[in-house]
Amino acid sequence: MGVVEQFLPGAGTYEQEGTIYSNFTGTAKIDLRNKRVTVVPNTRIPELPREGTTVLASVTHAQEKMATVSIWKINGKSLQNPFTAILHISSSSPRYERNMADVCKAGDIIRARVIDMTNRIPQLTTAGRGLGVVKAFCSSCGGILDFTTRRLQCPSCGNVERRRLAEDYGKTE
Image (tube, rainbow, N blue to C red; front, side):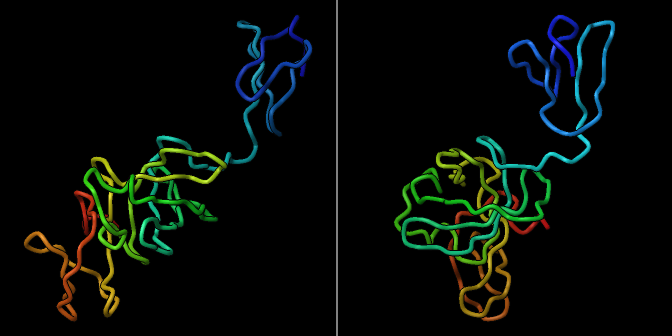
């Protein structure tokens, strides 16, 4: 794209041994006034989970101390291919929980925050404002649980269950 004597590397570029290269395929933009070269990508940059991002995920499997979830929305943006992540019981609630069944169950939809990306496997937390289960399903009949009088109850079979709920449980799509 050029050399550092001509331009400064801008967004979408990098400099190596005095030469400016593009990070990806795209359209080069040259700012002659500021002597800066940038590249606008032709393709969309994929959304990836990063520490601090808020995700919407479905619980695929819940064991005694951890749950495996499939992330399908990151910061409100839908993904074409979901990411697999882990929710450990120690980071699921601000208070002590004995069993993951008290936090979430398979099939539930949760809102969580990414707290760690070690080994490129997102580690999640549901302990925080606005985080937790946003939609839960009855473990007996599969119906959507209603939140009434401080408890989750199935309108079909009357089953009562417990979860770590988000403040807006049942109000999100």
